[in-house]
Structures are given as C-alpha cells and as structure tokens.
Length: 244
Image 1 (tube, one colour):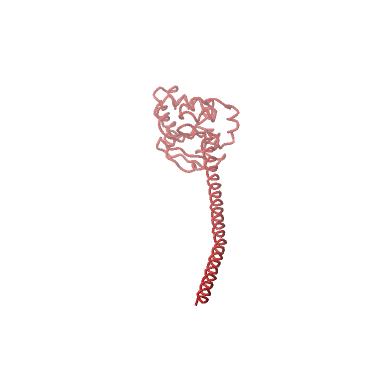
Image 2 (image 1 turned 90 degrees about the vertical axis):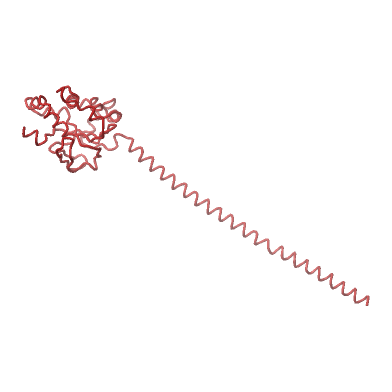
C-alpha cells in the first residue's frame, strides 16, 4: 500500500513538473507576438510622421504662394502696361510723383505730384477755372482715371482749350468723362464703361495696345490709394462737348 502511494506521489510530481514546463513554453511563445505589436506601433508612428511631413510641406508651399501673391499686390509696379512706362520711370524715378510715390496718396493728390500731369491737375483743382474743383470728389471714392498728359493737352489748339476752360459746365463735362467709377486693372478694363459724366467711353485692345476712344496708352495700371490711373496721349471729348 505504501508502495502504491509512493508511486502515486511520484506520478503527481512528474505531472506538476510537466505542467510547469508547458506553462514556461507558453510564456516564451507569447514574446514574439509582443515584439510584433511593437514593430506595428513603430510602423504606424513612421507612417504618421511621413503624413505629417507631407502636410507640413503642402502648408509651406501654400504659404509661399500666398506670400508671392501678397508681394504682387503690394508692388505698385506689378500691373503696369504701356510702351512708355519705362520712360515714365526714367523721368520720375522716385519721389511723390513716381509709381511708388503715387501709390501712397489719393488720386488727385497723387496726380498733383506727377510732373507729367500738371495741366490735368490744374484743371481739376480750380486753378484753370475757380468754379471747377473736383479734388474732394476724386479723393473721396474709388475710380479708374484716364489721365491726359501735358503733351496731350498741348495737342489742343490754344483757342479751343481756352473755350473749354472758360466754360465751367463744359470743363466739368470733359473732366468727368475721364473718370469711371470703381477701380479696374489692365486685364479687365477693355469694354464700354459709363463715366461719371454719364456718357460711355469705349476702351479696346489689351496690354500696351489699349486705346481709350481715340487716345493711345502712355502708361497704365498706375496705382494710387483709391484709384487706378491710365495716362493717355490725347484729351477725350464726350459727344456733347464736341457738339458745343
């Protein structure tokens, strides 16, 4: 009987050892799975890092494009058109009457600083006729201004010019025919536009070849703080003024 009990005890001991051995093997078998989870975590983190890098690069590119557009918008010479813009820049390279200088002031003030627009400035400020002063009007809203240069006024026979200047109503009609409500850039100005005068001016062509009725472009797209200016080589005459 004692012998059988010893055998039974021995068998139980062997069984326990075997179970412990299997348990140890089981623990060892789970270790590779833990390593696999770690690898998956590293791969996921790597993918997320790559995605974040791509998003950052995309944002940097968008910011760079925005900065370039902002620089273009802030550059007063960015949209200049006209074969004589270079000559204008040489004649007025700096100061209040230059391209950069005019951009700082409202249009009537800016034109008064431009040595190419002295006659026009005198006409709109009451110097030629005290009953015609458009400075506050021009400085008070957004406009597109067709600005005849001094050479353009010089092409008008003196007798005809004096007749217009002495008639306040006629002078006002002529001057306001050169002003269009709202600002228009060179790439959108072509077409027929109602002027402050009430009559319609016809603008054709594009770029350096823009024409304003019968006037040719000297230099356009010149910015002021409230207007876009197109200097032209002739004084425009509305039909009503021509008939008179």
